[in-house]
Figure (cartoon, rainbow, N blue to C red):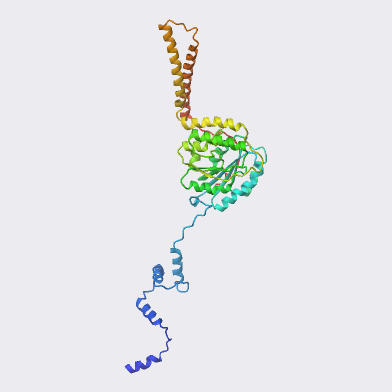
Length: 403
């Protein structure tokens, strides 16, 4: 039996194995597991990788390859510099509000610049143009832009109500979770929008631009310097350029501040009064390319009165009696003291008052004191029943029907 076997074995035609093949065959013979089913192919892949074998398309069947592709974790997308990470996976996350008055020449170029930035950021956005009663072809240009770009929305006022009313209308109709305001004269650079939003990501609620290198006349720069210094000292808002039109807001800010009159200059002050965190970032500023400035000398006088209004609103809006009552009490006490002294002179020193005109001053101070206290009480009643209604009239709206 042994001899027959020894003869038959050489007759079997077998390929000559390589030096490593017998070891591999024995290894596979000993360690070879049961053929996995389609549902267990996921567990077979790590074993092949641990053994040091290359897992290629030729050595893995189709089912195992599909499982490998499905179970492999995807690498997180690295946010680009032009797109803040918190703007991802949002619906209509960004609203650009642009008030304008007689800026027909700059609208097409402005739209091109803004859309270029938004396309590069790859975010859902809307561009809200608020025509503040323009008398040129601004609304016609806006109609053309709205027909070409579905992101454009247009609000047209019946007359010129001012920048504050335009911003208020834009804030009310904006759908974005984050808002950016800028002027329509091409002096604000849309390329600064991503940088403003980057600052919001750091935890701020409002970011104001700082036109450190300003391309305006010396008189305008000088007046702006005085305005910002005085406002900063009186209100406590430490910003270099409070009235800069280029700003970024969280939605919560625009929902909690009421803009009217000429208070657009003091939006950071109003926001800080409500407890929001204010920041500032340096932005580029360009010379005016078309037209001329719409603000004259009246902006300085109105700005002073608006500053008094803001000081009142930020300190005594909910307690007007504290403002009027303090002055009223002081005037009343002075008048009462004068009258008490004159009464003592007449009763105990027998001095006549016909030649004492100071008595009229005492009576006047008493009357003024009573009136001021009365004004404070009336202000308290108005503050308790105030109803903030829009102070503008809208003639036409375009694009807002598309949600």
